[in-house]
Length: 219
Ligand SMILES: CCCCCCCCCCCCC/C=C/[C@@H](O)[C@H](COP(=O)(O)O)NC(=O)CCCCCCCCCCCCCCC
Image 1 (cartoon, rainbow, N blue to C red):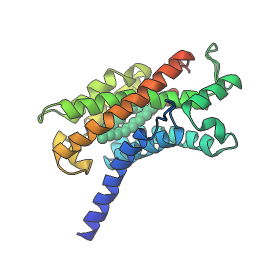
Image 2 (spheres, rainbow, N blue to C red):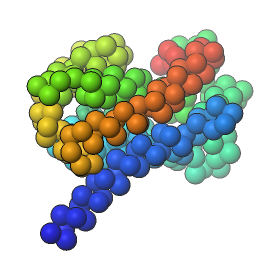
Image 3 (cartoon, protein in one colour):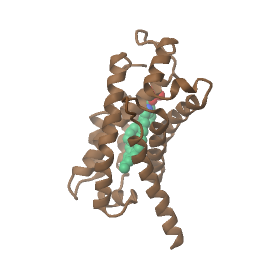
Image 4 (cartoon, protein in one colour):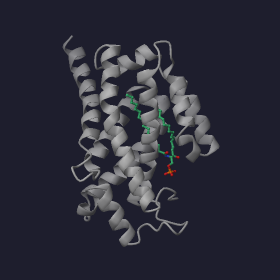
């Protein structure tokens, strides 16, 4: 029993962490702080991991991107990577990224965050679908629809295919909400409802920032 409580507490902390992290991203000046942003992603990746090995090709890619960004946040130029705004300004001014050239550094913070940012669009759609769909709805179908309406446009055929196959392994709604480990299905739905406005806000600010600097198509 003690073990059960411990593992439940860990999972619960995980979801609370995700929630709290995205809430803590946006400053009064509407800047997006990178540290809580990456902490939020870490929590999501951990959750994805708990859903099984079929998703590991997805979590590995997300993990690599988060790790690269964490390196910048701890590196020599860490003050340039405190917020997305600071990062964009620095990488543009120093020529690390150039929106007018098709070539660009494959490890720039901007192109890496752009991938996570696009995935955040999928997440918004998926969580909203999960929250509002009926009891008989299937997370695998909601996930496929959300993916096709967002991230799929940026992925080659082979990735789209692999992703769509993996989505079939998602558990049914009841079990999925239970895996979130925040209590009853109603509690889980409430947690999603609380988290979504913050995720939307982070997405909106990032989208505007990247659009303003013409960074939405970075290769
Ligand atoms: C719950 C089901 C989770 C399904 C996840 C849906 C997203 C599917 C993404 C498929 C990505 C496949 C892996 C490879 C991707 C890359 O090619 C591609 C491009 O990168 P590149 O330009 O460096 O080459 N990478 C990406 O687009 C970034 C993908 C990042 C995916 C992060 C997914 C995290 C999922 C977290 C799930 C949490 C659910 C929470 C529910 C309460």
